[in-house]
Length: 342
Image (cartoon, rainbow, N blue to C red):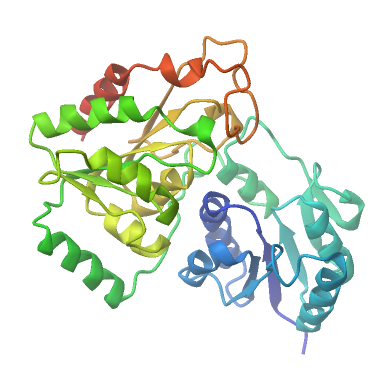
């Protein structure tokens, strides 16, 4: 019997993983009788396991046991036994292309900007002007228009996750109309200045609005300092919730304010309004919040912006004008307008 197995490869960041879900959802619609496996990194395993479109999640630990190219090849030979008939890779690295080469799937699709792109049987144009969701839809051959590409990433929350979130909200007497703020990022130049976040939070608490700070364990120090003297209205949830739990938590928020980082995409999966702040990066890279009720803000009148695809641990010019010239008043104005939108 002919194999009915598809492999989708996405071993990048958490945000990239979430933005690949719309393509996986469409892929399942196109091939309902096929099983879809996803090859991902350990950090995004939870995301794909929560997708109804994914049959199996295979983890590539490229920072651990699969770090060496020898172990990567051995790993690829192991999963080659799954006999995939179609392969789609939204990741473009050398390691990913090496895996694709070893697998030797007859029908393989990759972007024309991929490393070792000759290993793919069909190359798809990587359009820099497109949103990442659009790029992934192009990869699987879905011909979209301006109205049908804004597909919500779907994840399933278990009853235990829902219960945990509701228990936290109830325990802390948090209303389901709070403002969520995600102040962190892996990259320092993506972070909106702390003193500006403080101004936004003080504005909200002055109006008796409840604020939940969202982030991982690494954001604990920043989030704790942002609570300040507002512990009755500002709550630090950093490190308390997993990715899927955070998405479930955000479903109860009115608006999420986030840097250009993974929480933006968690907000898309939660189906809420998201206001994304761009400091050193730009929405033109294609990772902006794409729901029609969301917005982004950016100070673009700078010759040095963007300074890189991901940003840096320190501003290359030691000015950080991209962040400092973006007034908190702009954030507050957009947030208020979004709150009044139906």
